[in-house]
Length: 145
Image 1 (cartoon, rainbow, N blue to C red):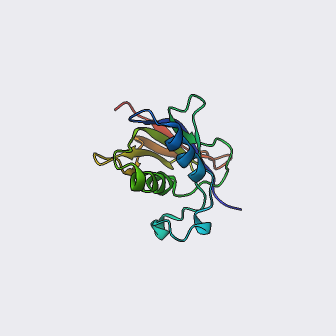
Image 2: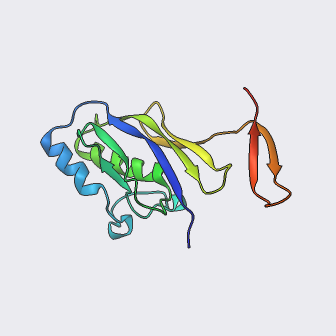
């Protein structure tokens, strides 16, 4: 078994893509990174599949909503960006994705930096950590910021 994380949000294309560009990005999405040794990537990110799909209106990409064990999604986004920029240097995504892991405190955001590269930013949850004395379920009583 592995660890599951879900993602909410969309990454939009900064500029509308042409049919050729859409075909190129679609050929990357869903691929197993291990099948492409020529794709540069950070092995520490433990990225295996590009668990991203095109939005229905072709205006961007999002998590595929079905993969249970998505790891290193920020690196997947960077692989897509790197490969697209080889042919189209101005390729850029905008937006962010929010992530929630199985652990209640495992929350983070995939954000794009000023150069358009995806980064993982932890979300600190203010509040008291509490464990139920009956069921040992852990939760946070959030306090207003």
